Amino acid sequence: MNDRPYVLLSCATSVDGYIDDTSPERLRLSNEADFDRVDEARAGVDAILVGATTIRRDNPSLLVRSPERRAARAARGMPENLTKVTLTTLGELDPQARFFTTGTEPKIVYTGARAAGELRAELDGVAEVVALGAGVAIPALLADLHARGVRRLMVEGGGGVHTAFLTADLVDEIQLAVAPFFVGDPDAPRFTHPGAFPQNPARPMRLAETRAIGDVAFLRYLVGADDG
Image 1: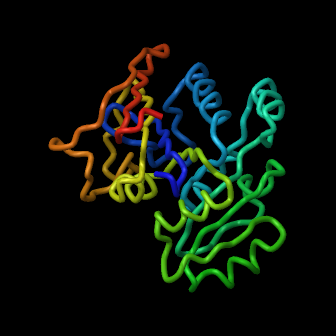
Image 2 (image 1 turned 180 degrees about the vertical axis):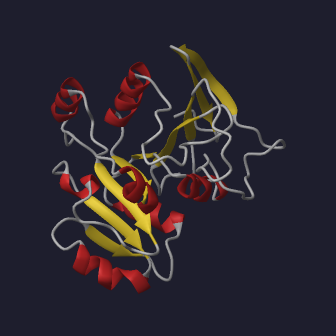
């Protein structure tokens, strides 16, 4: 892992593994105390990554919310907020999305060579577009982030991104919040997509922490040998 960041995958799901429903409004899968836990986790990393679909669907800002945590980061010589990272093969990103317009820290868009030119024109002045060959290979993305000084990366979805990182065996830790209800809609987005996961019955993850946060169950799994 010396040539890549430590990867923390963070997600909130329903009991049956959904990360949203199909309504126009974002499904609230957590509570304020758990949102604060996530904010604390964000404050401890260098960069945060979401997929382009998450930007289009949820329009997240991906900032550290707490002024005290931002001040503590600055006191440690870190930027107050995180470097924001996304990956896309299609492009089609709105430069007015909050991903690009909030925070003064760098925004990086990883893509393939085919979409890079158009993306550079669309996102000129708001993000750096990095072409990684024909497609977006996760090992190459992580190596590039490591070369930029990113030592801890938080991955926050969506399901396709989770699947890409997990099936590539490039996740070190999963922080999972489980909401106390079901969604049950086969058209709704899920925590992961079908794939060949190395985290299987022959190679289980280690459950390092469990606790109740109100009615939300928090689970922390260590995927590899490094406890982080």
